[in-house]
Image (cartoon, rainbow over all chains, first blue to last red; front, side, top):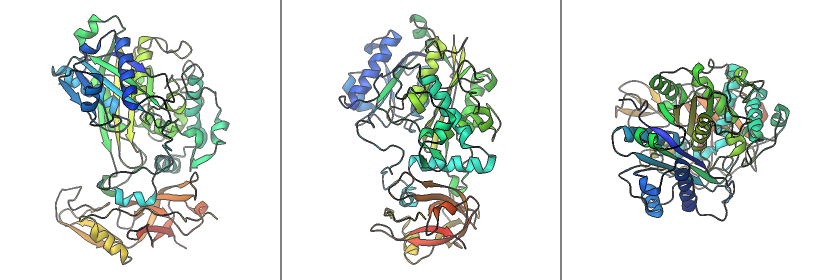
Length: 389
Length: 131
């Protein structure tokens, strides 16, 4: 069974806050839910399916369904880090196709900035029962140095340069200048990026995404519900998910799980990378974008550096406009989890509701991709292909 | 020359991994080999992640390897080098490169096993650049 055409994204909402010391985590979940419902033109009573991930407090869906006063007949708390919400869209479509629900709410919220979290540079505490922890925690892996090892290997194997990686941040900053909610709105140059302080060789400060509070929500609905609403119709054409890891010590840092999730999504949608007008790519770091584009077939493996250079990702002038909200690199990275905002900006583009300065002309086919966990150890990959109907 | 002096977190030890850490306390690095399919794997498991046989055995590693990738964490109170090292036996393990000038570390560099004390736990296998 395919999910092609079986579900639509009817509501999408990104919380405008980037710093929420005065709000609770549950409150942020409810605020984004309310925003997405209003965007769709639906009410709380219409929701019959709920999806959330590890950022939801308490017992996940049980706590949030209670807090928001929902009555649902389907729930799913698939947790694959920052890729969770793109996976939730696919799982919501599956549930809708199976008749398990017809209006699914997906929420994400977080407040790492209010909590003073050093997201990328401080070791995190994982359960001592995690099978890998004894063989990793003593070496102080953090988010930044794990992604940095991928970048270091990519440079060694393919000749990728810091300047090429910097172009990804430059493109994001060109877009963020038009987003009044973006955390960083200043346009930066390649020189600004490579001259910013080194965090973990070879990644500089400006190769890293922002740390923000806030969240986002999506409403995924059945075709008959979509037809009854006034919003432009954004149809799910294909989806792919994958998990990549260390394979028992056969470690290869040069590719991500997108090598599997991408082709699965393209095959289901019946389109190829050359058909895509706009991409939202999870940009925890610049290297994440470069590897994902290669892995999904937008260029040959190892050619990502040349592909992204010279403004190729800037909307209006480049060959493949990406992350036109400014992405995680400049705009928003709520709860340290990126795929929610990726899907939201893809929906804006397909509806023609992106900022006029970054809106892609005739944007009828878009791709959104999430990565969750760590590119350097184990991560989830989720790819969605969406069409304006 | 930047050197590593940071406190090393103690690895949690459980019944499945106790032989590994007992050997580490004696200065030996053990890795797992599957008697059914003949493959080495890392980190160690009771059941082979390749063929799912439970006939896995602890074997001493030579302690020599090659740096697959690394990163010097500059934004830390004391900079340190994290790395993946490919052992002669073929498996690649996460580790630190220690007791050397961190600016001399390169992919492809040859390294040898050393053990460093952890904070209240068993010593931890790390590597240093081979002369």
